[in-house]
Image (cartoon, rainbow, N blue to C red; front, side):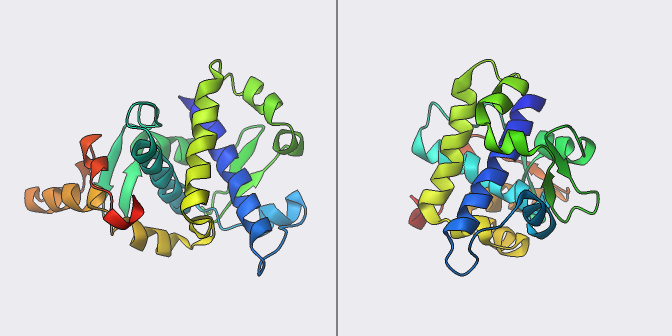
Length: 198
């Protein structure tokens, strides 16, 4: 799954860049170096945007969505977390494509060729089936279609937003009742999206 996670992280950085470019107040993020030093794509923010991408993909298509690739969600204090992706972000700090800053404050694009050459990235990430990368791209575009400001929200705002979802609420209440730190979020829990999101 590492290649799926790596591609998701790169595609998320690309969509974040586009959302920033399209925002009249923020304007272009400038060079890759400026983007790397100024973006706020912390690990917490990446995890929240990952949840939204998976949730929107399920709401869009109940059969063909991101859940098979991100299926280890748990309800924790700070919202829904896909645990395998979280572990990837914690342990795979740097590779040739992208880096997760050790301070957790942002991610960095290390190879600008990849940022500009999506096909090369897909090939080097060993995504054999392009339908997976297409699914990731489409899921991130769904976030943009719902509201591009999701990409520009702070981590705290995204935590608060995901707390509005019963997808997280119901399992987290079970965890509290059972006096445990977290509770699994099942595929069925994703059907509990806020009505105003649908």
